[in-house]
Image 1 (cartoon, rainbow, N blue to C red):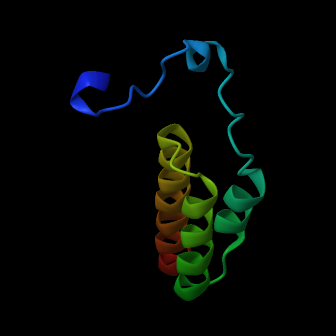
Image 2: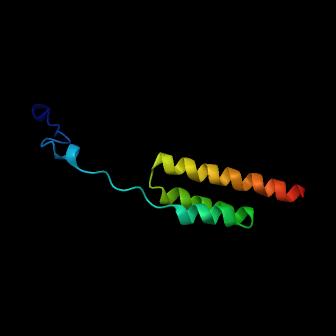
Image 3: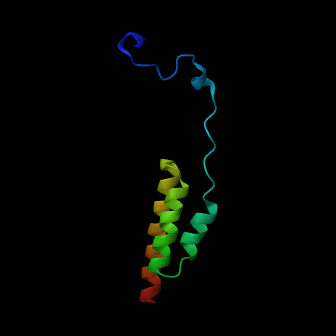
Length: 80
């Protein structure tokens, strides 16, 4: 690779031994989604929650599920 002018990403092998960063804690964001009082507030806290996931797809899935649950609950409350 060096002959082509392309440097290898991990030439010493240490990257494979490093621990991954811990997943961010989104508990407060999930609670904020559940407690949102209207659609504007839900949109705001939903966006903040997605940003807090830092690209972690498993956490993003939890945020999306929390938003769907909140929207469904709002629909049920509106019917009552």
